[in-house]
Length: 401
Image 1: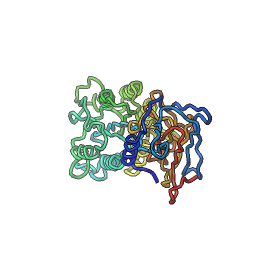
Image 2: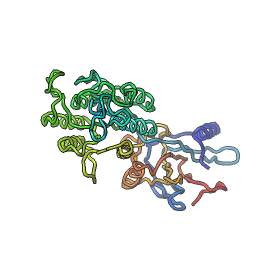
Image 3: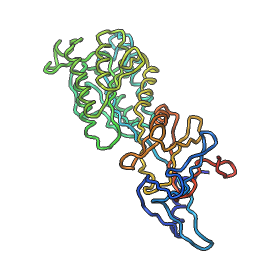
Image 4: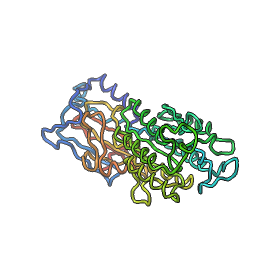
């Protein structure tokens, strides 16, 4: 039966009080005098296992003799979490977003609940409110006026648990009938540049991405003045190329871009431009008719966003919640059926420490299983050198092996 984190700390403190002391050593560096240098995992199928470290020595807890003989220090475990990626959604709020998914204007009041704006915002709200594995942020374009104006800031800063703030921002740009309020032109290039600049102000070490959601070709070339055909003309090959270059520049700065096209497949010029943007962003869709994610309704956008979340799921797992200095350790996860799975220490299809030993990296199939949602609820186990780490126990409290 697994100890809870709080119970683990209590056991550790009691052990310290009776003479079990911590002896720091090089994290992850196991040495052996009589046995395996890394220990072995055995178990019943893939759902349980025992890590034995016969002969392992190093920076672990050491037992001190007391009344009744030498004391044994048992295993403990704490939860560990993948680094959540930072994703800034850059959402088109141009006037054409008030049209329906066939880009047809419904009437003077727009298409309301049937508009492209309504289908996109519904999907964003759904995914952002349910997927807590990502730090989400949001920027509209245009956002300084209803023409080509783009602010340097964002509508909602990238952060954990900010779905309510994103929903509030979306509501503020939505008309009572569900369509976009004061739709603008399409200054995509300026929005990408501002989004990348904002990402550069974040100080966390999490992986960072831009997610561009637009319903067509960009306009608002430099110097257009905010009025007349020079700001609204599409297609504009030079401006489309400038947007692709801005996305490439963002990728060079460390911010790859996913591109979502909203009902654009029937527009050859828009589709070609969005394909180029997706390739420039470094995350083109594979195995599909378009390099960008072509969506036509709320359900297809939800599916696209969930796929993107899986792709960006970080295979770097922080050890910030785990004690340092232990060399007799093991890692587990829950699979899709809720079974406990031992993840082997393996640079090909298991885990390994990063250069700082402040994180572990999942490789190969272990990383794939995290990204596709098969693995969750990661645990870090640690014990004295030479102790057996039992990942799973049966109803009788015996190690299931």
